[in-house]
Image (tube, rainbow, N blue to C red; front, side, top):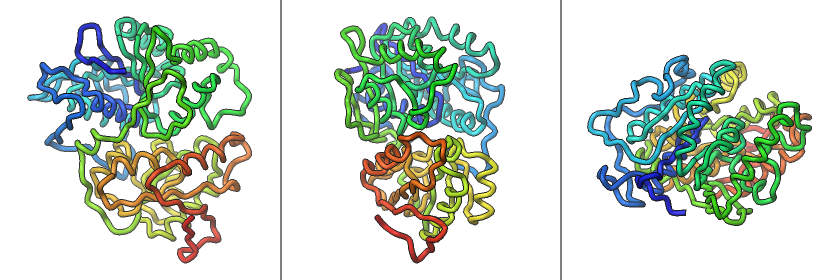
Length: 417
């Protein structure tokens, strides 16, 4: 696929529900140079220079989110007007289908500011603000969907996105990276399976799943390439099973590296949190024990919380480990690239073990990943959980691997795999 941004009838509509999805839409747009020559834009592949002015960062407390701010048609925190001296980039409208979680909303707000600073139009939708919100959102977006030549989405598993796909007549569909979910989506599409998130696979479909099944099946058909529709996957994740006809484009975080850094490095290590406890995959006490052992073994000082980690869990973690809990206001790839960041970044199996080495290429930062011990898994975890998490670790490039650690491990007994 060769996008022809800016041409008549070639408008692109992008739907995002998380900060990382929005970041990867910016990376996709940068990779495809999605702006017109009339705006003075560089040709395809040229770097976007770093912009001046204050840059969003990380804070120790949770972002409150925009609340009821951010009416439809604008990004929260502003009127939607572009900063002085910035030229609007033709061809792309970013639609934020805002969740209700305050942490996610806060990060999305900061990412929306960055997108507007880059010259993109951002439309903020309170898509979950009450029982009638979905009807208002879908109704308001329907005309745009019917006119769009290209639709970009960050989460093909999202019921919201799947519903919107039934409306669009777009000739080009693009799935941008949503981390490990992208690996599973591509594999399921290649095998012709129904679209189910990996940590839910193996369970019995609920009533809502059965009710929504026709919409999900329709979305899967639309995401299958045909003579009428081209499909692209833009990802930094390893993709082994490429569906026939799907174009796979590598995301190397060129926009992030051009826009931020290089970072100032600090002594010691930083530890990256995960939401595996919140999703019911890993036992909470086992996770706490592993974090404590890992931090002691490697001299970790800070714990970068995942946006979905609960406040109660983080409070207990800070109290029992002595780690400084940081709630980032931006995706970790941007936080790490801006710095300051530890010379070693410790993580459990997650998307960042694939993305951070790309965002930090050329720096002296070392990324290390700790395996998940099968004994940590809950009784309700998907039968595929251990194999999937091992695959996430095993396919990561340019990382060091650490054996799973438990309460019996001490700083002297840290084991490198």
